[in-house]
Amino acid sequence: MSANGNGADDSDESRDADAGSSGGSTASTGREVARRLFAREFNDATYMFKESDDELAPNYTLLPTGERANRLFFVGTLTETEDVGSDSEYWQGRVVDPTGTFYAYAGQYQPEAANTLREIETPAYVAVVGKPRSYETDEGDTNVAVRPESINRVEESVRDRWVVETADQTIERLQAFDAETNDYAQMAREEYGGAISSYREETIAALESLDVSDEPMPEDEESSEIDSDLT
Amino acid sequence: MPDLQSHAEDIHDQFADQTDLTVEEVEDRLDTLVTDYQVPIDEARRSVTSTYYDEVEVDQDSLNDANEQRELDSITTAEEWIDVTAKVVELWEPRSDAIGQVGLLGDASGRIKFTAWAKSDLDTLEEGEAYHLGNVVTDEYEGQFSVKLNRTTTIEHTDEEIEVGDNTTEIEGALVDMQSGSGLIKRCPDDDCTRVLQNGRCSEHGEVEGEFDLRIKGVIDDGNEVHETIFNQEMTEELAGISLDEAKERAMDALDTSVVADDISETILGKYYRIEGPTLGRYVLANEFEQLGARTDSEDVLITARSL
Image (cartoon, rainbow over all chains, first blue to last red; front, side, top):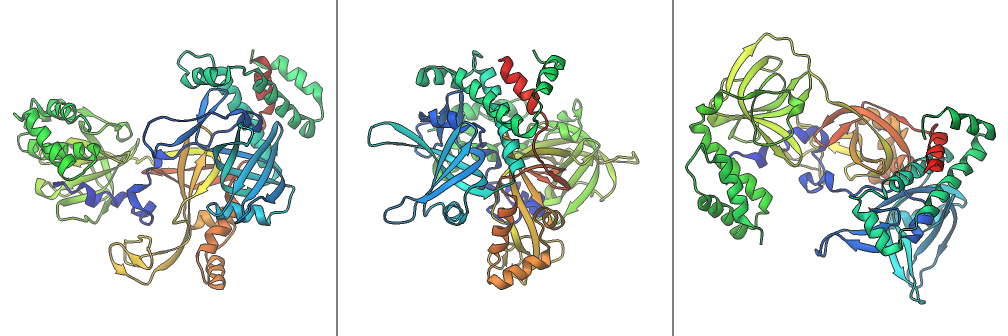
């Protein structure tokens, strides 16, 4: 069959880079990007969907600002941890950002994250990579939470960077919301009603909360606003 | 069931003016692979296409004339017949008797892998020398492009000075994951092998006494794109603040090499980095990096938010 031996020589170029792990089976391009969004938006994102009927197709959370998310990255203050499991350990962590609280749950299948939650002293700045999950409460409401892949203690500067980055990317989504080709915005209108102004307000408040702590000179804001090319 | 016929038609069209094969023949071949051997359609397509290339090679001379002279980094589609002028940056040991020569070509724009088939019976390329290569065909495997030299390829030595570019790129974002094969690893000690051992075994040389090395295979994510990056020993020592000797000691004390990866991930995960280096396949090989602190443009972002 493959008389030209493609299979045999393809590892040549990767020998330096990757002779070790599972060869071609980890499709690099297949990894889902980690979206940046504030807790407030995340907790509103109760609608989950798949792009295909395939049982193994990835689950996506529909963001109210018109994007899909299979993974998210956030940095905030871990304020409380608690083992809420009954039979086995099941750790809940509350991670607070300027707009609200992310709830992360880690059990036996997330051993590293569970370890971190068990051992870390609160409060602490943490960076979390995780997958969105939704579940129904006894009252029939849908709640969302994060299943963490990793939780790591970080410095305050990382958290500040994340707030600005997340504001930036939230704004980008808001700016793209009315584009005709934005299918996820269309979906968000259908599922959530399409009221997005509160996310803009939360974003502004989040950025202002940074300004207060870092630059206690509000008049700077005024002047740079005039100088700026931005409309 | 995938639509084999339309795949067959595509392949047929590609070769229609060079051979007299029929759509049915192509479909038959595809069907054998897909139905009898459970080969995924993409792979089947690739295999069948290669087969026809091999056949076409024989009476290929007609294609020699109107090829485009191309820069290596412009090669972004498979199965194009092109000419290149490039220097042989590196030659590797062929893994199979079917391969005459395999290695890396470079020009000012970048580098690309090349393969010459043994049966094409071509002149031998020398490392460090530059050549005009006429009528090579591009190929793609898992997103990585290469060129194949074939029976119709013309090889002409040139004294042209070729400065080889190194595809340097810069990526930045949060380090969101560390892949397996990171931390304290063992490599095959065989000359020019350096493969990473799995359970003490080299996939080429079997059970060997490995040599310790440190590396990080990290995932950098900026919220829009994902990049993979590799830190070699030197870069890993700098990034994670642990030397190879310290790492060996840690592993010795714990009777387990995986503690090193755990230590490293605790140090680096969730932080922001800017990384610069050449790309090799899907990886950016970190030559330089810096950890990123708070952004200085929060004012601008705020202004944009208010103006919405």
